Amino acid sequence: MGRFISFFRSWEPRAWAALVLLTLGVWGALALAEAVREGETGRWDRWLLQLARQPGDPGVLRGPRWLPEMVRDVTALGSVVVLALSTAGVVGFLWLLGKRWTAVFLTIATAGGALMASGLKMLFSRARPEVVPHLVHVYSSSFPSGHSMMAAITYLTLGGMVMAVVEGRLLKMYVLGLAVALSILVGVSRVLLGVHYPSDVLAGWTIGLAWSEACWLVHAWLTNRLRTPEKLQESPSI
Image 1 (tube, one colour):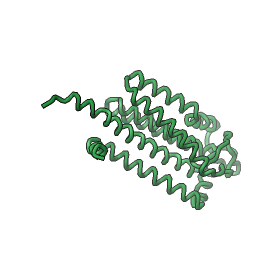
Image 2 (tube, rainbow, N blue to C red):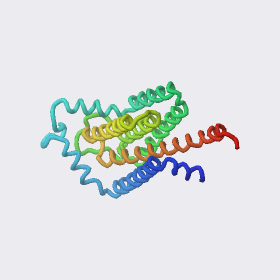
Image 3 (cartoon, helix red, strand yellow):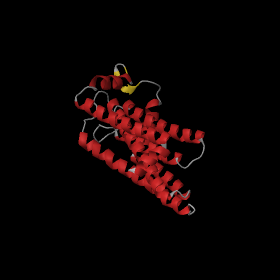
Image 4 (cartoon, rainbow, N blue to C red):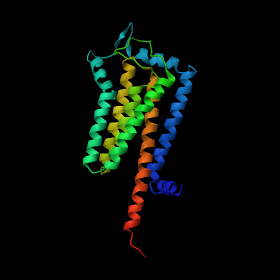
């Protein structure tokens, strides 16, 4: 307990921010799950799905002709293949950089997130929306959005690990902004394609946020513990 308290004292700004975001993510996910179970999200879920389609022709997205193809390309950023390749690329980068402990932790964190995502979808088993025609084929249940959740888990966790090893505030903000933007774009694409209710996507985002912040806290705490013996050994004896 003493080590944990000293960790929060030494990392006060970032550690407390992570704890707040973790709490908000868990609270948001639980609140959304309860609202969905009680049917409280149905009205605005349907309204937002219909809003994205042409009046009188729900099979067509509002906007230019190239929009549907672009949305399909964006949604692929949340697919298992793309996320696995992205993770492998960052893990390799960290490994070559000599950050092997971080590379191993990142592999475990993203794999654990994938298992959690699969378990949650089986637990809730919400039917896919039938408000508008689907613009891509889907096979699993709807709540929470797997693409949104795994995009948030993967990109935010990758971003957090990369931010821990790069120097410069501007570069850190760029990495964070890119991770957040990718997570948002993937989630929005699922609604535009008609395969998820907005509440599914919000739940995916909140769970992904909570998971990524929990991973950051665990990684930072364990790293702090692993470094402590080294610091003690290097300290001159009195």
